[in-house]
Image 1 (cartoon, rainbow, N blue to C red):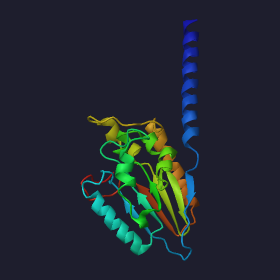
Image 2: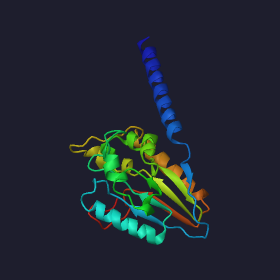
Image 3: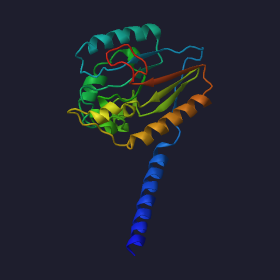
Image 4: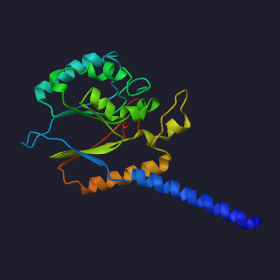
Length: 229
């Protein structure tokens, strides 16, 4: 009877584990969300890329924003890409965090920058409320803002594949130091990252765009301070 009871418990535990895995897979395995970005229709595409910027105007953010506005007008850009670390040092505290306006709306004020911004999360964003940063509530505050984990933007001659890279970096799990990371929606990380890679590979294979550009916060190869990832 004890052995039988143990087998039942093991079977129940296995079923529960399979149910959890199935739920996670179903929740994250849907193909990457797609957005259509209108362009000028002449076979050209112009956009700016910026990252590691949300500092309430300090650390040269305001100066860089001014130059972005100048170049954006000169090029007549179609949109802006943000590669993450959107809000220092520890992301946003919530949907009403004034840092959103102080570091975004009130900084990128040039007319040429009043275009759609496509953003992904960086590791500093994961130190705050990631769900808030991706919330539609922020788009009601500033309609330019769009931040999601992983998605695709179709811009006619090019498709941009945005990838949430922070969950791929084991260092943040093993050595969080004094930081608290918001891993909601990405645990277990091995399942999450494998699904992201599968969906990315599928989207790349299906793409018929002339240019395919993958966007993420962490560089695969880099001679910078942080090196490869």
